Image 1: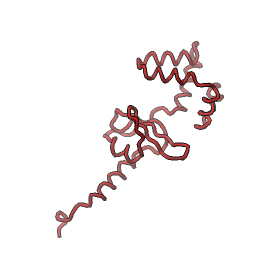
Image 2: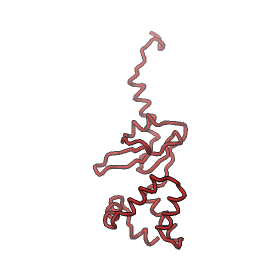
Image 3: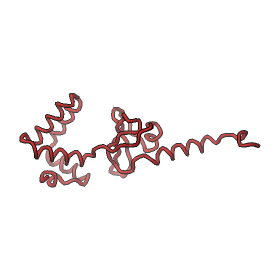
Image 4: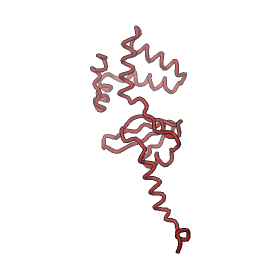
Length: 149
């Protein structure tokens, strides 16, 4: 029997495709622009250590494999700002602004012209200091160090 006459092992082909697609997926939690060049994914670890992949605009949670397979394209994965990096950048901007952090956030939200982003910023601004520090602590970020920047 020639190679052309042998049946295709579709399970093996699919597994190879999955393995190939996941090889280039990020391994460090963060926010990434996906290979399609348009979608953004937030890759993080839960308290139980499980990977979660959230695609902006999609309410479902994905796995590494489903993101790598379903959300592919010709562009490489591009790491965007992490929460820690964004907080540090905001602290730098606020330190150089006479209006402080509130002024910087107002300028950024006004420039975005996106009511949903503005709503989230306002909700998070209402968080009490203790909750914010506990959240930062979970991610290994010291708010005191950010204030000193």
